Length: 447
Image 1: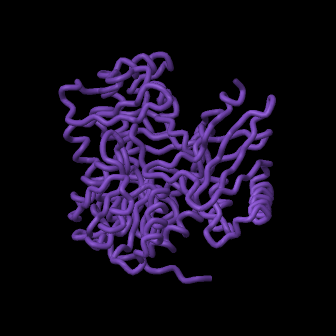
Image 2: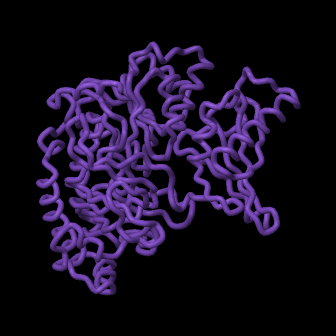
Image 3: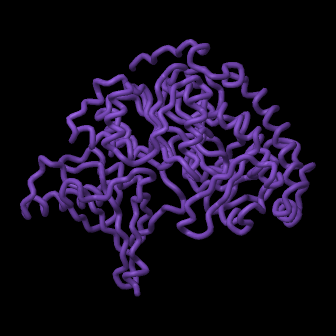
């Protein structure tokens, strides 16, 4: 059995040691007090919640223990869209100092707002997450998350500054320039989506830039599910430790949870600000700690846009086992996929992240891929477009052989039958933000 490394001195690795190591019983007491307060806050100030609570036959005073939260109704993304733009806010719009919003590609955008106190807490939680990941005051942070209405860019920016880092606000795009500035400025920390980090690594290799020998040592990657195989690929190609960070706009933005650099096995969810539950996606009943299901989050300190039992659709499990880093906050195990991203292909449940896990590291195939969905009669069909590596033969026979190898590999490990198309290097679309892994042509096929 391999010996576990000792935890680092907490004074040097924690932004807020007292809170991050709070005994679990003290955390539960704090959560109960804050949960009671936020339930009263939304019942008094948000008509949607007052109506939803009344319809469920519950009042804020019905909460006596944390388990009583199961009596309260869920909040879902459509609630934000149905109350577009400001209907779920618990403060007048004039009291807010920032708005963010989703892209709205599947309907009206979801709009989120922040009070001055909300932004202050967000900066603290992101600073806490940076420190948890291994960043230190004085580090140079190259921020390639998108700035603007997307919460990632500004969330990481203010958190890194709060920790005392120097921030390069690059945003996405212009990948050659990203590589040049990573080298020229000597960045220590890279922030990006994992798919864009791979894009940066690929472009650096084509430019002949060896980022493995640069001061870069750490990456904070989030905003999309990514597999352990992709993590290993990023770490190998950039010569860094790749840390998973979790968040979503409706709850706050990035910084809801983060892996610690000591363990990298589950993300510490900051329980002084959020209450985490896992429920069965079908029955919506709470599941015991350790069982996999849908993550549900209640905000405990948000002033402008509190969220009560928000269904994230992310599939994961929780662990309250002690972590050798010394942090006592529950760990959210890495998200394996989203409940609403699950595909049913000829009776087989498939998550895009499963396909990624099969492809990353497969001989002769690059980590760039896309899933194309079409309709064949009454059934859905899946085609996986992969990209061969430059050293893989490009003859028709070579391509046909590689396609059959990948098809067989997917069938063996996931159990789904699909077509495989092998593309030439560079032909699969690259991401400069969140990767678009699924291209759904079923309506066009059926037209």
